[in-house]
Length: 177
Image (cartoon, rainbow, N blue to C red; front, side, top):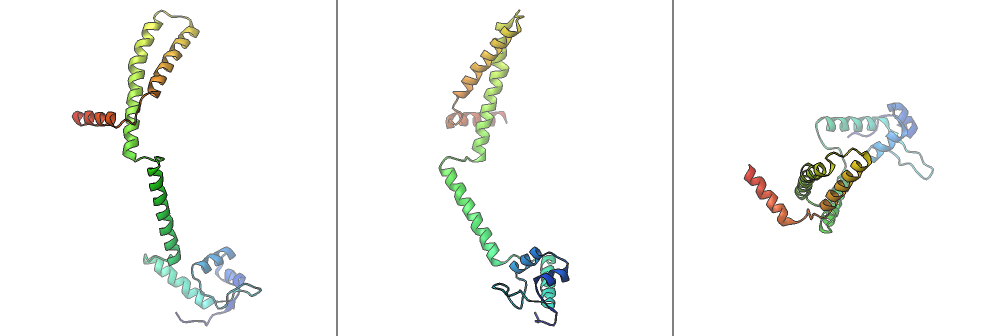
């Protein structure tokens, strides 16, 4: 890229020339915008407008052509971040804090099947026998809530993580197919 031949301007002037904000100029600098003099310690940033125009045109061309304009440092940070997330997930899995999706699905399926069986079967049968002819609303509610509590206690005592029970469910599913 040829250097120079444009106006020499500071950050504010560069922002005015391109019609952008100062934070945009700062973002351009992080992305590799060329400059003639680095700012700081009482010195202003100095830019050559022709160099900045050529740099912006090259970036636009790269982006239009599908080229990845991320700098190497940003890519390394993303890779490191992804590796850290994978390591954390592996650790959480080893500690039993997360489970594979198929295992969660199996447990949830067993649990919901048990809930359905208890609600549609046991609850209805027991309630029907106890509530025939009952007209007192308070007694009706008391009996219904007591039966619901019995079902909830039985559901709480089920070991849905029992691998053998899960295997039986899987075999039953295979037979149905």
